[in-house]
Image 1 (cartoon, rainbow, N blue to C red):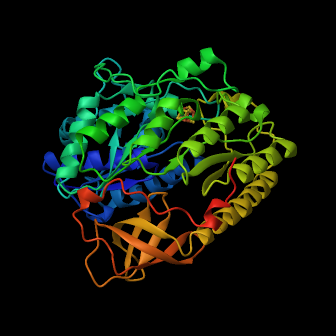
Image 2: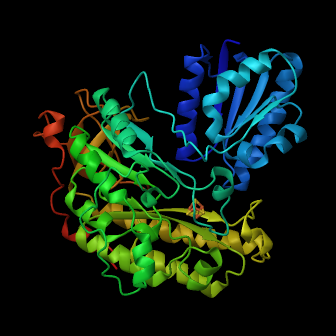
Length: 487
Ligand code: SF4
């Protein structure tokens, strides 16, 4: 077997797994091709969080089955969350499939392929690595400007709508030492920005217990959260952020996704306040603005707790932006519940919102609840949510016109110039006669579009060596930016 094609369906964790799959197969001597029709193995890396991704897998396998009829030696493999969720059942229900491999078994791919080379029935490997968690190291040949680094996997929460605890297992953490080494290697190879990944990334605890307590750990200023609950919310994530900042001084930007709101502790807020490398943007999934629905979702916070933590963060880090995830039409969600969600979105002023219609997922507690919001109501609510979030986003972007922003240039834009991101995660397009990819440039924002900005380089655009520029904060926001909705 010489070549493979890889199709990725899912989230950032899934994309990150695809990068590791590519490296594992590359080391085993296989080369990647873009066209499934030219490959000896087609691997579909799946996601099961949304129903659509699963449907997509089924239709993709159907299409590949036609190819396999012409070329019986073609191998079809399924990786990712659907593989983990369905295991043997997947191979039984779709006989075109030769290989099913869970996220924790990616490292075993070469052995499984060798077994398949000898013929025989489909191979299925979906065991969690509970006793000895493995985190495949990134060894990119061409270091990306912006890279993902996994710090933990699995989830101990039990949100009733979510299949992740079933498909990714309980929380397992990567030693801080390994995380830091990987980031140092990436930065030495040219990476400028790192996003730490984990299902509840901010519940992190170093399994080697090598991190000391972070400033702010144990501070409980909360009025909305009971002290015993708040104490249990503390983690070592802030200490990890501090260790990365200290030991990889050439890293320019650090982000993380996805945090759980209950672990937005004072130690994390202090880290945001004190570490210039931490970007001033947090994606903080809230899911609903109704306490009744949050309880049914088992989110383990209420609106008052979420709002208080966000208010603290904002008071400590002026200008920080927030984005979120919202599910509309969760079982039992009334019109009044939904209106509370709209009110919360408006009050917080999220600059980005990923909205989804609820759909029952297998192996989730919510599957037992009556999916009683009609499809029509779900669509209407989603459209209303998007109308509001589009307006909030437009107002936010418009308020940035005239301001100066520091943009990490990620690549060429479709329009022929460059594209990059501000610290607060806004996308900026701009033209330049100089080579700018990988640099941080200072741009004056000239225009706002629906989802992005147009910037202009000023005469004094950066030419200082990059590491010296880390930590310089943007200029004070304009009066209009200060008038954005704040809790
Ligand atoms: S915190 Fe909730 S939504 Fe997030 S991965 Fe865990 S169970 Fe799923």
